[in-house]
Image (cartoon, rainbow, N blue to C red):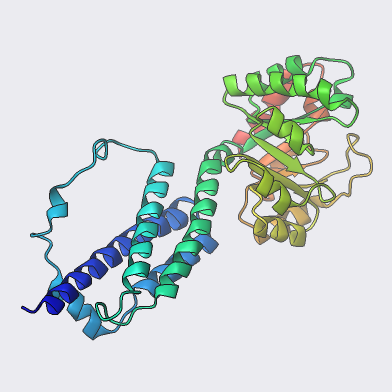
Length: 355
């Protein structure tokens, strides 16, 4: 066998091995996006990349198959210390993304060698590699936030300083957590950030101890400083894409909406959940726009994100709110201003769980 023919054969083996690794890695990432995260956009991006890279004419595929020598591949017996250990899903995503990226870079470089390989598009592999960097980031960030999002359905209590009427944030939060709250949000328009930081840190510690989500309303800097689980924004607050870029990738981001168009925009801008309301008139925010159950239902039909209903919700009407499509209900006065917040929370939770 001539030297040039031997080199060409080995080059084909390199191409074949790397195309196989790319296909295997992308398929795993695609399945995670599709079956675990139910993310249509990421699934389509990964599927399209896989098809574009692996697509080739049949004669070339035959050449690759003819040069394959799985039994004689020395790599089959070469392991990496610790590779046999179990690993979390996030590490699996990183490992397979890196695997694909490395193979793309190999093919990108091999394609530049004249006279050794068949005609390959080096630029295609380069572009795919850079696209995968972004897809990996989006996939991993959504995966890391998924655990928080799936803990949210149920009762979401907003600890509003004005509504406390002098009572302790921590005492009321402790009571509603005992009553079954799944998420606590700190909302305050009056105190200084310095005062709020101490309160936020105490609430964060309490929520962490009881495996309850802790969300900060409006203030990105406070959410970061207190290491909150997430941030909640209104339509006139920091734009979602800006907040998403500044938040760590494991922090959830919620947004208030009053229309299905706003909800669709929030989903496209990578919000993790949506708060729709006000469902009924509320004393907690007299200027709030009342959208009613019909709009809540329309929003539910428009998006797949977890949906939190807010505004005027009580134990008497929570059942119809859940029936209209809410995954969670956010309350302030019905619980925070109750004589016994723990019991008030428990009564709402009982009716939610009965649905």
